[in-house]
Length: 374
Image 1 (cartoon, rainbow, N blue to C red):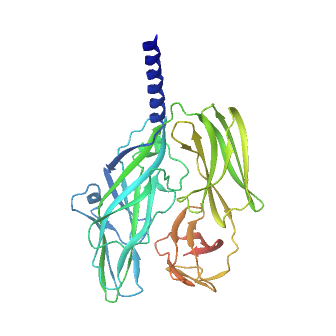
Image 2 (image 1 turned 120 degrees about the vertical axis):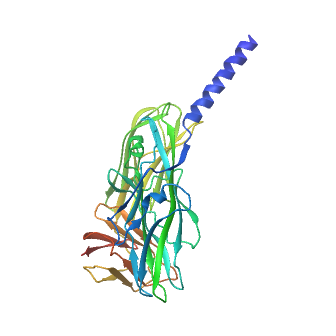
Image 3 (image 1 turned 180 degrees about the vertical axis):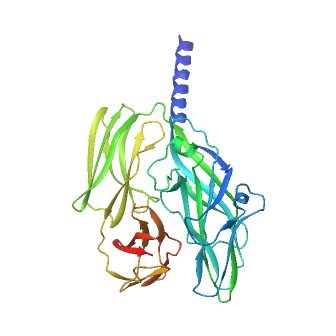
């Protein structure tokens, strides 16, 4: 009798362990691409030998340009790496995406630099989600930079296995170069771009989300969702972010068994973009996340002056107080660039020469301005 009870308990413990591990986000990768190309969707100078960025072997995809001196700048086309060979089951849940780029800058002299202009994911033939370009200058020797994380979906809300398995899923990189004191022949050199994806099985989840929405209601955000859960679900943690990267808990709602409708009112949203998601906390299992929803609120920051507008090369921003943060978006709301000036700057110059002609939105400390790129 004791032996039978012992075996039964061991079996139960093993099943519990399997249930938990099935919901843990594991990593697949890093994987290298098998397709590389130059794309003219950004910038004015091309990447030569794009296939050299498929593997790390000391051979480089290179974009180079000669600049005339201080104040001069230029941006590259997109270097696009795709077809990473992922094959996730259709029932898996994508938790996060990590991109690693091994790169260096050539021809750097006093005042000159090479930096990210755009680092984005591609899907369905276009760039998707947020621009993860870093403000840091590329070093003169090979260094690997990491973008994203194990729970980072790049501002896209969610990714399906079909999307990341597709041949057109990939990474698009554009570089920006700034001239120094002397005329410089600068180059952006990329040795390898790799992708790691974190995913987990959806089998045995404690909850099924039918709907999640976020809408402005006056100066507040009204969140609502419908979910079916079993007794293993503890609570929903409501998380908010101003940049879709760094998240904070703003409230929690206890979960009820069965199918239920839930609501929550965020009475103090941030000026500018507000990203919301639900963290679903399960007893004895890994947490799960909902899709991400965005709501925008006009801020109360002091007005600034933008010129020229319409613009062809660069737009200047001039304010009466220090500028805290500037975000450039397209009319679809996708973030193209995020800049946080240092040193209490009251003026800023934003290069836009690489952008296609059209209307763009420039958010300065919560206030939004429309600019026309010609």
